[in-house]
Length: 482
Image (cartoon, rainbow, N blue to C red; front, side, top):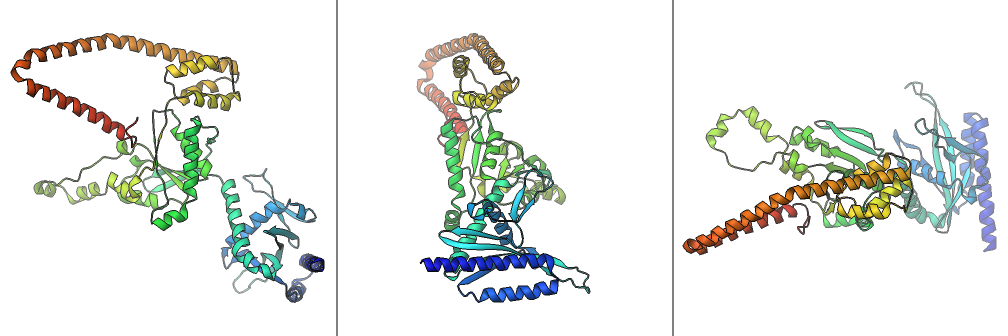
């Protein structure tokens, strides 16, 4: 075993020396000599029968090679590893938009070892010059490629495990680094993108922790079930219905979901869409791994019943008017395009709770407790205040004491207003009760003439009102709760 390790180390050292010679040759020797030397080195390396090599070119024809980009991103994370501490030449670059962010990568001719599940792989960045074609007017160009060498017994592992692992790792890196976008339909059938800079995360979201965790678990479970959705023949999508008063954090929750999943947002303004065909174009143009946001569907789309019209009335309409009416955006058209807009999870965004207040206080003033907390929490139990209202007060002043005392004043003001409204409504309620008693008294007096009929009539009216309330609640949640 020791002899084998020594042989492997010697061979690896020889290969590294050959690659160093190649790197120096690329800089010092004419192209004809470099090509002859490269052929000789390749021939010598091929005689090491235990070593196999995979070449990853930068381009395939005129298209960029996705695997090359993945290898470059992956190896950039390995530059600082202990095994690569001896690398003498590194390449450093940055972009104009992110000048402060430097990317460190391999330089041509350098060697970088990497170990994956006990197997050793050695990477080399190779550059060569391709002569131009005077007839076509193309000049000489540099061709880059990564070469990874390994023992022949690891060939299957390299192709079926190691390279897919590198691609997956690079994808995770890109997803974490790329900036998110929010798209809005500025025109009827076109998306207008802009950078999404909303900082909301689940950590800073003013929501009870149990509810927050249930949403995170649902999202994470959904993203891992692509194969499951394919197997059962369903589109890989999930719907969430967010409902509640204004200012309760619905927009912040959408941004937190986007930042958590690294998904772009498509904010669909239905009033800006002229027809079902334009709506179809917008939805088809959406990228994968994105979030479609539709607000107040029932308020922005004119709901049309499929009724049969009089034949004379149909003939009275012009063909142009009829065609325009038929192509107008309809609820059925929206449901058809997005497979029913089924809401898999209903999320109630309510008024500020004690836990939500503490999260907001920590977000804006980095505190976990304060002398005003007992009073604030008692007031929050008594009044209705939205997280947005609480956040607005906490942001007004950098002084924590001042900000929290201002919040106490707001809550006391709301409590006073609520008490006054309750007092004003009391006489009206008393009068209503008196009218009810009077009416019941009249019914008792008239009971002699039609007792059974009148009693049945009252019961039907009362039952009808109860059903209307239940149906209204059921439009928000499956179980009928508000």
